[in-house]
Image (tube, rainbow, N blue to C red):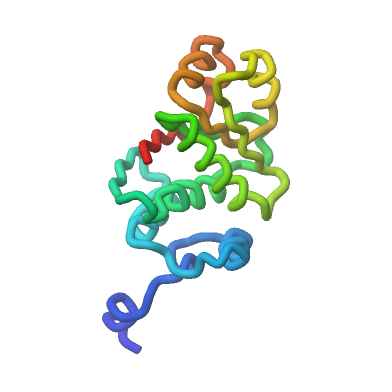
Length: 162
């Protein structure tokens, strides 16, 4: 089959986007087999380690997987620190992102996703961050942690507005 036919008539798979086999296997377990349009554009961009990205897509189009899958792959398992912060404007969206990333990351026990939300003490949440790769929080909580200088050395920052 020609390259033209492959590119325009056959759906891309996550392997075509550069997603590792372990993550691909987890996606199969979750019955996610074909990437959405936003995932086809965002995943390769992020895996190439380009700096900034703004991706706009409607609700339900797979934006969390679009940024979450490459980040899970880029996390350095040897580094015991928070490497990515995902900020959401509401507690509900932050909890949804945390739940999805926890499912995606379940193939690798070295990666954990921690949710930081109001209703818990700052000290307990700072303790929860030790040795974790991701945190999901709302803007108010992020501001509290930033002021406390709890984790300013993250590599990736995502602001997801839903």
